[in-house]
Amino acid sequence: MSLRLRLTLVYSGMLSGFIGLLSILIYAFVSMLFVNFIDDYLEDNANLIISHLQADSTGNLIVGSDLLLLSDDVFFQIWSADLQLIARSENAAQLTHALDPVSLGEQVVQFNEVEIDGEYFRILSVPLKVDNQPSGCLQAGLELGEIRFTLKLIKIAFLVSAIFAICVSIVLGWIVIGHALSPLAIMADITNRITSTNDLSQRIPLSTGSGDEINALALNFNQTFVRLERLFDSQRRFLADVSHDLRTPLTVIKGNVGLMRIMKTFDEDSLNTIEKEVDRLSRLVGDLLLMAQAEAGKLPLTIVEVDVGEILLEVFEEMNVISGGKHALHLGDFDQARVYGDRDRLKQAFLNLGANAINYTPEGKRIELRLIQHEDWVECVVRDEGQGIPKEELGLLFERFSRGEKSRTRYENRSGFGLGLPIAYWIVRNHKGRIDVETQEGVGTVFTVWLPKTQDEESHPPLRGVSPGVNYPS
Image (cartoon, rainbow, N blue to C red):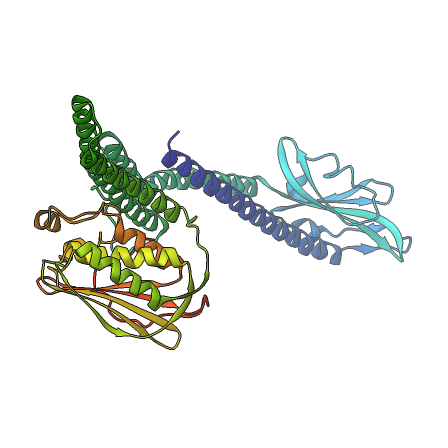
């Protein structure tokens, strides 16, 4: 059974119950009004009849001839104390027995509904007294045929109206619920197409101006598709880059091993090459393991007080080695500052940023490191005069294996696996810091690392130097 049919049945069932209960209450109220009207009418006629009765000196009732003409629609009988019929109305001439035999002789006023010769009557029995002594009984009745017929018509009208309302509610409920659930059908269709085609670029259309739960669900689905699409693209790039980065050193290792096998001797140059490629593979595996730990929130850190200036000086020396004198490396403003953090991880983050600047900066261009101390924060800057980062690549800057197609074409010989910036980002983030990026194509790029001097959760770095469009991993 479909959700649309279940909701329609639930809605119609609840409406049917409400209409049925309302109809019963209205019918009972109308019936009570009719009964009260009849009872009041009988009481008025009974009082009129009693006002025309007289009694003799012995207490016997005397009925005048004009009493029999008091009413045309009310049936009445007057009984003596010994239950003898004294008088009756002309319309009750055919009745030889009491209108209500059960209440006859009772000393309390009673209303009863009685069937007489197939007709229903409402009977009022009133005991008569003279000097507080029982002297007879008056029974007055009114035929209920028209009243019962009217109530029957009302009942049929309620039944027909209820059936009509329920049918209309089913049709309207089916239409309205179908319209409300149409986005769910679209979601199911799109997810089925995505499952069959693996095309995550499809999106669920949103209703503009609608803030209902289904629209919010569609928005969440679209955001999930975006994240999945990025993840799958990242995985595809991962497979492509890892296969490329693994194939090259493995080919070199295999070639050198084959060469030594042919020569049947150990060649020092071949061994050095093999060792270099093994180190390259080890770095790749280590970086992947570090990224996996960082993304799982299990990045191991040893937090102690460290000298950031000392770390940056060591990074500067290693950058000189990596550059091989091909770039103009400079130290700019350089304060002495201390923070709480993991020394090795922070050095790795700064070295990754420095290596990234070297890889994407042409030979002879300037690369500058700066360290500026603020009241609660330390600002570490890596500035290069490279080609800058295209706007379309900013959103992928801190994703794994994201090295940019333009940059790939421009610098084929650069080292690295596309993991440097993501690792730097995760290290800084786990130190409760932030990385800002300012870039301009053809001019260069500035990476600014903000590190807190304390691990205070309420401290925030200044808002500056954030390039529009840079999406940080969540």
